Length: 151
Image 1 (cartoon, helix red, strand yellow):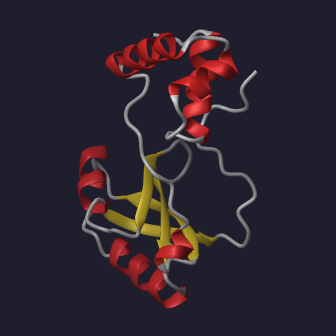
Image 2 (cartoon, one colour):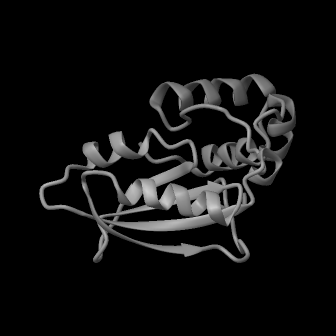
């Protein structure tokens, strides 16, 4: 179910700060706190809002090296097999199947270059992996945790 403009503004406000009060959100979007709560409850019930979480700076956890690994799989590897294999790595923060030459792309946060290299070697050694290609992030430029600025 697509969100209407008001719902999008509520979601944006929550994406910026999930601890924001319904009253504060209501002031931003022109609704009462109870009306915002009803909309948030509906958005949660429909699955548009899947949960609330905290964003932690990976460097605060000692993970200062970020990289992406393209995975080229052996034939007939299912997305479920890739997911099972990669879910064992705490360094993997995101993984997706993709179009193009690679079958999947994986975002990794490691403590340093050696740690990244060890993770890369372990992933490359997974039975479903034929080969990998990796890049390291020099400077993250844009990170969004929502759909964009509220109107």
